[in-house]
Length: 203
Image: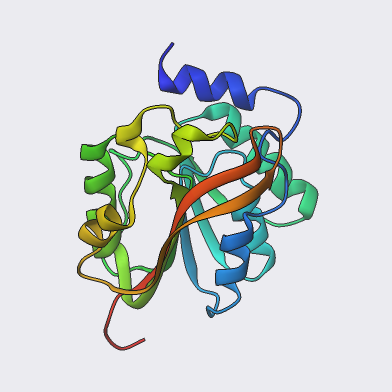
């Protein structure tokens, strides 16, 4: 089964597999930012995109799962807002340099080469003063049963993110155990890496 088939199969379930509410860290960090243009890679069923749009953000999301895309648009319609959501791969997605006020990577796990490419691109796409919000599983997550990739190379350490986002000023970076309550597939104790970083320059 390809990764695309895996995610289409998972998102084809009737339930919102990671819940309909936004990720808690994303919600908390978004409160500190002035709404503008926000990108959400690997956005799945759209819970974070819809929340941000309700808070006044101009949201663009993408994922390679058509099933996720359909559920995201249905959730947006249900909440009475609109989001831009493209079905595409992270290797293919592009946008204008210095055009984004924020990018949120919420459990957006990729193989190492693609991860580095996407993170490099994100630095270019951010406006000066723009922010990155990231929460992802740490390699320690392999010892937990609350979700995440089983391939260690797709799990992120603080050092890895520090290297990927070295052009940015890192405002928060931690590796921490948390309690997950995000639908059936992210539930219970988990071990994550969290980062908030900003591109320097005039806002």
